[in-house]
Length: 281
Image (tube, rainbow, N blue to C red; front, side, top):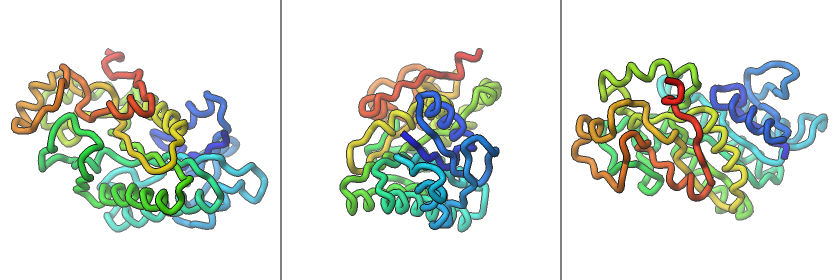
């Protein structure tokens, strides 16, 4: 396929572009930053006309996209004023989804966020491992935007029954060079309690995107995407006793198994993470 990847120059986006190209897809990167001659097009995603033009083939000089992977965003709370984060992310996502529909594209994979699960868990989660089964609990403007982006996708799929939108609720994206910091987390269980000690290796995040592109069932769906383990050498039993002593534990959580459940992504998408920070030590 010819796949447009918004935010393809970013931390996760670079892995996604590399994997999709490695699988034989023709990938065009739509981003505000990039390098010439690399399949990159400078696009302001808050400008609807630019989005339509880019997805449609850039003045006819390139073929139109067959599918869209929408990763571009202000990627976390606190990086910009709340109003700027909300305005940028919501408008960009609307423009990408609406342009895809207008151009007749039926497959969109979009980056949602683990934050909709209730991060930073100042109010404890209803149970662990957390999963997709309880209602969203946004606790920041950034997270509120992600929740509303998912809601928008639900309604657009209702309006357009042929449309398939898959939202991936990514955990904190990590590269191999980030793993050198992980042993320091073990000094204090509270340091990473905010996301239940989770993370996602960028290479496995890219695998999840590729799997989601193959999930063409019409309608909207969402999946938690994390690495298979925690960032901690301390056991889950110790971590939960220290930080979430009253929270229900559903099933077996293992010694270091992720507390951001990837069971549904494994079962439905065939997601099979291959990388752990522990492999680097």
